[in-house]
Length: 298
Ligand code: PDD
Image (cartoon, rainbow, N blue to C red; front, side):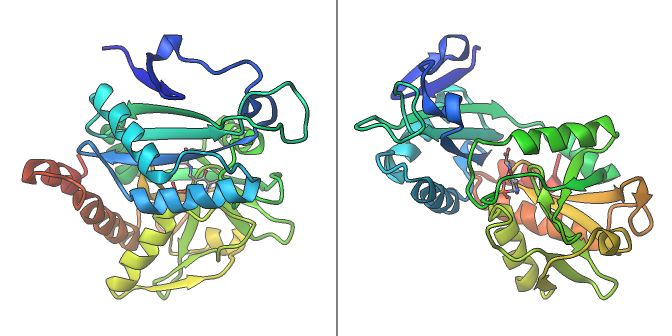
């Protein structure tokens, strides 16, 4: 079955799907996006993603995008037409098509595109078993990473630098030596006292949906979460480290710049949080079999 993309109200085979060559998202990265998990055919944490999308749209002043209800209908259609049970939905909203000029064009329609692909639980299960390595490097992004903008070139370069060094993720570091976040994930550590630490929200990081959920799940389970910046040295010496994102929930980090974290094995607190996150995802499933599949992490 060929994959189907949504493009401005139409559902098209991926190979035929495209936007105009003067779409501003393409020319200026004048666009914002969301990635939402599909769990048993359902959109997980839809409202939280729509709230963040609304924030991004407001910040970049794209004011004529469809609302959450209309987007939700198109998203569900995209999921259904691709017959995705477990996957990731990608949504991008660009300012629209206009003759190339930096200033906003008059009277353009926002461009809306969506794709949906199946998610590899096997790959995630492997990461959960083995943990992943991260490589640290300077954060070279623009001053507004809190906006989920498609202008991701520094993130792309950081991720590739990490991969070239044999690491899964890049942890970007600000001028004062504090970790900001991963190139596509939120960064966390666990202290010797078993306190979970992640950077407070500010213009320096994306307000991760998984970050917020993980924080709430951890607190409800009696864990202490401290929102403060941490240095690379503190992360290297931490008891545990992990990262969070929509595409994997909490994933253990066992190596930072070639140095093992803790005993070099995925940490117990990270495992506990990942299990809580699976319970959270299972709440979106419709039947017990699907729920068991999420809970088992297979
Ligand atoms: N990345 N930080 C950055 C820079 C991100 O790009 C992401 C998400 C996160 C985690 O956010 P959330 O928990 O809402 O997924 C943190 C998505 C998955 C991506 O670009 O593919």
